[in-house]
Amino acid sequence: MAIDRHDAEKLATELYAALARGDRERIGALLHPEFQGRTTEGLPFDLGGTYGGPDRMWHEFWRQVGKNFVARAEPAEFAMLDDGRLLVSGRYTGTARRGGALDAEFVHVLSFTDGRISGLVQLTDSARWRQALDGAGRELSAIEYAVEDNVASIRLNRPDARNAINQAVGDDLYEVAQRCATDTELRAVLITGNGPAFTVGGDIAVFADTDPAALSATLRRMTTPYHEAIRVLTELSVPVVAAVHGSVAGGGLGLLHCADVALAAEGTKFAAGFTTLGLSGDGGNSWFLPRLVGLRRAQQFYFGRRVLDAAEALEWGLVTEVVPSGQLRDRAREVALSLASGPTRAYGEIRKLLRDSFTTTLPEQLAKETEALGRVAAGADPATAVRAFMDKSEPTFEGR
Image 1 (cartoon, rainbow, N blue to C red):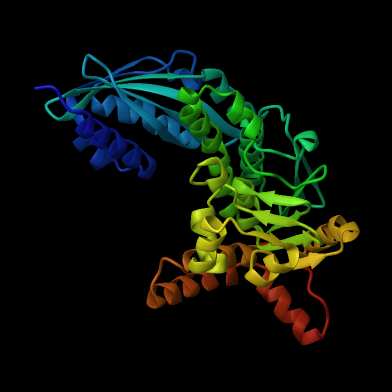
Image 2 (image 1 turned 90 degrees about the vertical axis):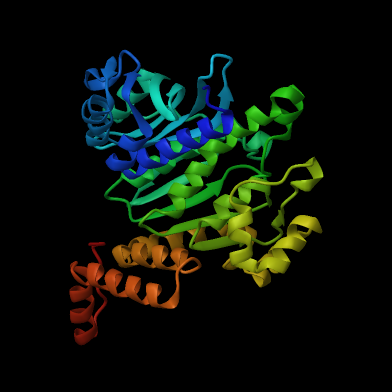
C-alpha cells in the first residue's frame, strides 16, 4: 500500500530532526531494514557512494559527516512524486570543524516501504562541502566584512538599493554569521549599513520581477539563509551592537533585534510594512517584537502600519540609545570596543540566559543561572576582576 503525502512528510521531518539531535535509536526506528542510501559523488572523505542498510548509512556516512562538520539539513519544500517517492529540497547549513562555513543546497528523494523510509538519494553541491573544509568561504558581494581589534564589522553594502535584502544579502549574511560563529578570537560584533538607509527590508524590485507562480519559492529561498543568519547572530557567545540610520523596515528589523545594544541615528524611521505588500512578515519579527515591545504594540506595529521615529523607537524599547546622526558610527565603534574589552565569556552566558528566560520556569532559570555562574567562575576573568576590585584598579579581561 502506497504511503500518503502526510505520512511521508511526517517521516521525513522526524528523520531530519533525529539527525540534528544525533538520535541513533530514533533513526534506526525510522529506517527500513533494507534501507539503501546513495550520496553525491565528489563529497570529501570519499563519502559519496552507496550504503546498504541502516547501520552502514549511520556509521559510514552520517557519523563521518558529524566528525568533520557541525551541520544540519534544513528541509524547505516537500513534493510527492507520481511513483510514491517524496522529493525534499533544502539546505545544509553549518561549519566544517576545522574550516569555514557550509552552505549547500540539497535535494533528497525518499522511498518508503511498510511505513518506514527504505531509500534516500542525495544530490548536493559537493564543491561547497570541500570549500568549507578549505575555510575559504564564499566571496561576498553585498556585505563588507572585516575584523579589527577582535571586533567583527558587518556592513550592508547595497547603498543604491537602500540595502534592500535580496538573495545576495541573505547568502552573504549567512556566510559572515558563520565566520563570526567560528572565530574563536572574536569578542564583539558591530552591524551597520552603507548609504542613506540601514535597510528598507525585502527587495521589492525582486518581487516585481518574479513570476507570481514562482514568488513563494523565491521568498523561501531568500529567507532561509537570512533567517539562519539571524539565528546564528542571536546565539553568538559575544555581544552584538547594531547601529541603524535612515530607515529600518520589514525583515531588516531582524538585524536590529538580534543586537544586545541597538543605536539609532536621529531621524531614523522604523516600520514593518509587510501588509502593504500583502505579506505576513519575516526576519523574526513575530518572535522578537512581542518580547521587546509587548503584544499590543507589536499588533499595532503590524496591523496599524505604524511608522516610528527614533524617539518613539527608544520609548517602545526597540533601540537602546538615540545618537546625533553625525556621531552614530563613532559611538557604535566606541560601544563595540568597550564590550570587546569586557568579560565576554560572561556576556555570552548572559545573552543565552536572557534569551531563554521567556521559555523557562523560574526554578529552571535559577538552575540555569547556577550552571552558567559555575562555567564562568571556572575561567580566568572573575579572579582577575576580584583582585582588581581589591586593589582598586581596572581589570583587564581576557574573555576566558
